[in-house]
Length: 202
Image 1 (cartoon, rainbow, N blue to C red):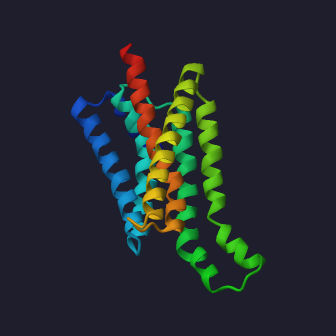
Image 2 (image 1 turned 30 degrees about the horizontal axis):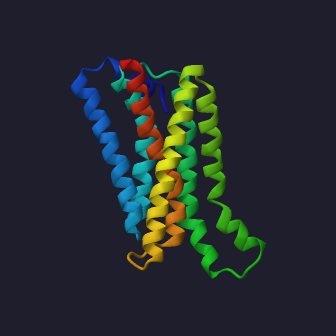
Image 3 (image 1 turned 90 degrees about the vertical axis):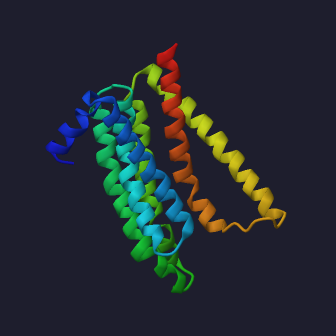
């Protein structure tokens, strides 16, 4: 991310209210649209991943801007770490992971199948560093948001599981597992915004 982009993001909290909320609306559209395209399957999955790759880093800055807070170094660092990891993940899913379908069982097949895990692990480490870079109050808000997000995703997963077991719907198990991390990220982010708003209103 260049210095011009950094200045643009750093000044977002000074924009008029309509500009900050419009940016948040665009961010939400990117996240919802990306998630929806992934669930459709086919060629749309790549576009969906690209929308998530753009929307999640932007949501970090847009969320702070809506609260009239300046993006700090910890936010810029997380965004810089997120983008290359997500791009590597997309390349791995597009060009490497499909190859495992035609491979014979063995170490090479295992390596190809698990290659996308490495950039996701990179993202998780970056997320931990992001949370640890905040003060005690902000860390508590992050942990509470994560706990609520996990609870929401768990309940939704159980509902879908029971409906699928009852043959009322058909759920692609592999796709459902792949969507767990994006679903956690989205619910965690939205819940964190709500918790911060509540804290400021008290």
